[in-house]
Image 1 (cartoon, rainbow, N blue to C red):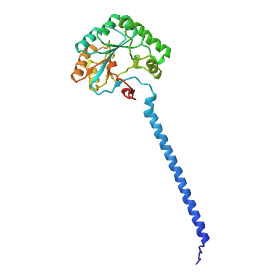
Image 2: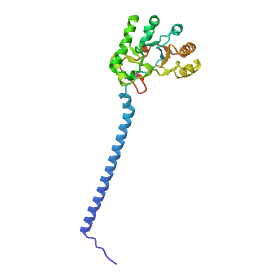
Image 3: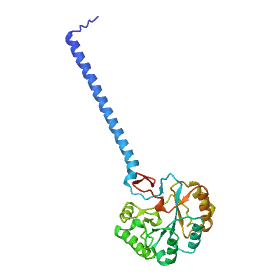
Length: 270
């Protein structure tokens, strides 16, 4: 049998080797944890930028308003015919509703008497451009010209400059929003669309689309030449009012003071 003699020197060497091995393991683990932490941190930062910061970087119009009361707004875009305007005004008067009309310049020029009737009835009038263009395709100066030409047509009739703007086709980008706001307007979209420009949509379909989704701060989109507006408008107003909602112009629906617009286009207190 071979006998191993462990000397003091052997023990010291073994201890040194063990310490070196343990140190190497600790260093390797720390690098692994550091890489994992760095990866996790980078992922979290990326997710934050894609979610929270994305909404802050993108310019958004107001789609609806966060309110504690049950105020809502009815908006009516007018760009084409005029044959239903009197009916709309009579119906709004019947239910004591004040709406916001977004008019196009060529409509204003063609129907100045109806513009005056809308204004005299106490309804709000917003800027819907002079010629109903695709705003995303315009330069900043062209956008400014569209809005200024509209005001030049409207102001002699009403004596008042518009405070609100709605982009034709609901089309916008960051430059559109920034340009329009720099001119003193708030940009208004909608969260409830009647889609009443489609002839195949029945009045009942429109009501079934809008009424169940009504909530405080909603903005409803209609058109003055909507195919079924004579059929659905009285029922829409009556049902909303019966359920405790109050129709107000958009400018009254908007919040005062410092506000933000979240990633869903909801205006909220800052």
